[in-house]
Image 1 (tube, helix red, strand yellow):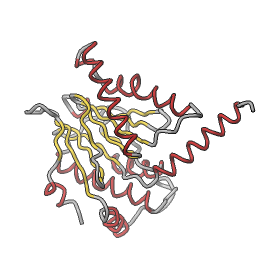
Image 2 (cartoon, rainbow, N blue to C red):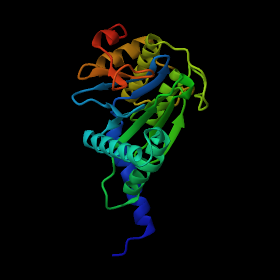
Image 3 (cartoon, one colour):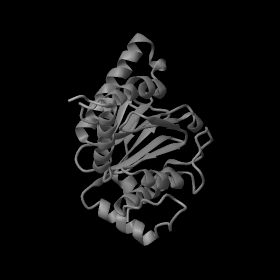
Image 4 (cartoon, rainbow, N blue to C red):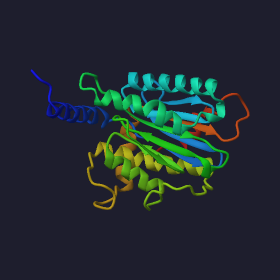
Amino acid sequence: MAYTPYDWQHTLSQKVDYVEDRLKRGSPVIALSCKEGILILTTRRSQGKIFEVYDRLAFAGLGNPSDLEAVRHAVVDFCHAEGFQRSPEDVTIQRVVGFGISPAIKRNYADPFQSPIILRGLFAQVGRNPEDDLYFSLNFDGEFTQSAQGAAIAGTVPAIHWMERVLADGKKPKRAKTKSSLSLNAALEKAFKAWTVGSWAVRSASGEPPGSGESPSEKELQSSLKEALEDAEMEAALLDRAPHRDRRLRFLAEEDLQRHLP
């Protein structure tokens, strides 16, 4: 029996439905620029989901743990090959996502005989100043978007929009570079709020984008946060802007997070 273009399109549609169903309960991931560096926040059950992949570069995501690990390995290999063949300064988030990872995921997604990669990824590159920070959000089909000052990913698109609204202080998210004067503590407070709103949007199955329905109450947000932490724990790390050791990424201590928990 011949394999027609309709069959190919139908297979892609089935892949989308399958992956979105697997992703929709994934824990949101927030990344936000501050004076000290880039704050990355999410939750974990067993394995960590925040990784340093090269100097100045970090990766976090949600989805199938084995797919997260496979992408992490691919990113690390690409970064070290680029650094060896060119120079460490040439290893940028644009090349990693645009030329290293995205094309491979697109090929996998378009192949009807390959299992889809169950993943949404967030890549961050810390600069000398907050306005130099870069963020790339990578989807399971290989498409990606670039943003500045912060980024958010979640299991559903409406949840992402809700979190972006919090990060932008209720305004339309900006893609251009702007200055950030947030301290680490202020960034933690905003990141916790954005993560909680995203978790609420996922758990309430809210398909309404921000502005088309009522915003969640504080009681609803606290309830959603407590429910999320029943079988998971917060994970947060800082990609240091001016490191004083070999590695830029340092994980925040539990006491740094407790003050923001109910």
